[in-house]
Image 1 (cartoon, rainbow, N blue to C red):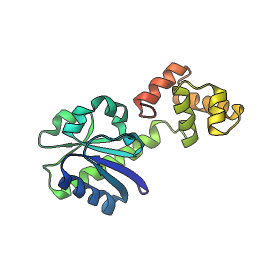
Image 2: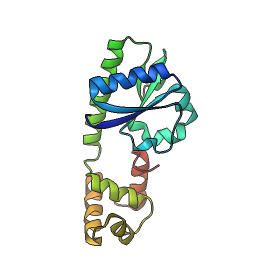
Image 3: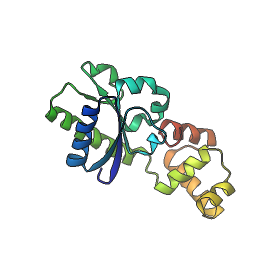
Length: 176
């Protein structure tokens, strides 16, 4: 995940600094630290959040679930459906867990949709209710190019309806 970014959202500064160090030095991921959920957090490639902030902002995090890691203390079994790090593990265990999560995220993101960056841009705007002309104007492309992107998106995802595309975009953190 070189050249990727992460936000670490935790009230525990020491834990945040340690994770920032691990991510930067071992995984080449640029990380920033926040004490609570900040506007624009969904723009980061990875969201690492403590249990308190996760529970406090669950509605905002659910659409970002595929790129969110929960910092759990002790009984992490309750987060089995989420990526999680058991902070009571030793340093080697935490590094191994992060490596496994990053590998899983890379595989899921490449297999998940196969959408190009521009197709994701078009999908985001479709899900926001824009017309083809509005999308073309916003992205400075022709309407025919928008139509081609929409056709490719539908073919790749197997979703033909706008409502289906909206649901997909929400569930995969493309819109919130």
